[in-house]
Length: 232
Image (cartoon, rainbow, N blue to C red; front, side, top):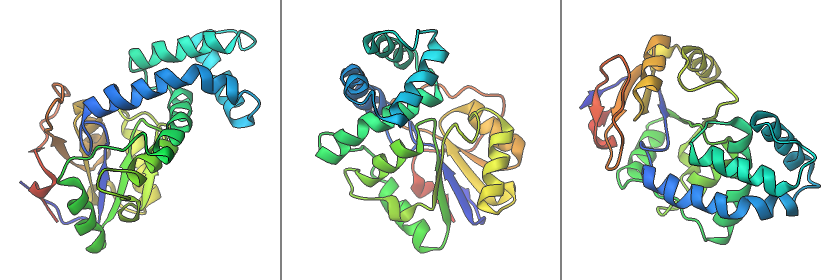
């Protein structure tokens, strides 16, 4: 159990609020199936074209090559779980149609919705920091099996703020939240992310969820198996 009296809570998504299997077996698979067709259908969209050029630069694909080649490169990045900012933005755009059609419904652990509602009702500033794009985060929390959870969240951060394993990213987030890092509790299943947040001065908690990998990391972080173990 963690007793925390600060006004801010920062949450990871995969392995913390939602299962790793949902992200990989459902969301990633949906994006892999759709990416080729999406790149062809949306190639004249300025946003998609910009992301495609950035992704091509990252993967060494000729921007003038057929969209299918870039799609294969994107699928390879997904298979290797590369935290590519343009790929994550592209995934968010692809997932939009799935969430809006009802084909995709986000999984959240049962303790998450009541905790978010309680924290929000108590006046806490609860935000998300994920490698998934802000667009994807909003779609995710707006279309969960428990309904729309966006009203419980005050903000979202992705890798455009900075890498999740660097302390400077958490310092930027604390500044954006208008708080000292020590006033924010960061919850994640990845030890290196928690190490970075701790180095920046945040309080930390290690999420222990079914299907999670070994967290790794250098420091010891208080484990929680449910958000009910976080007393605020």
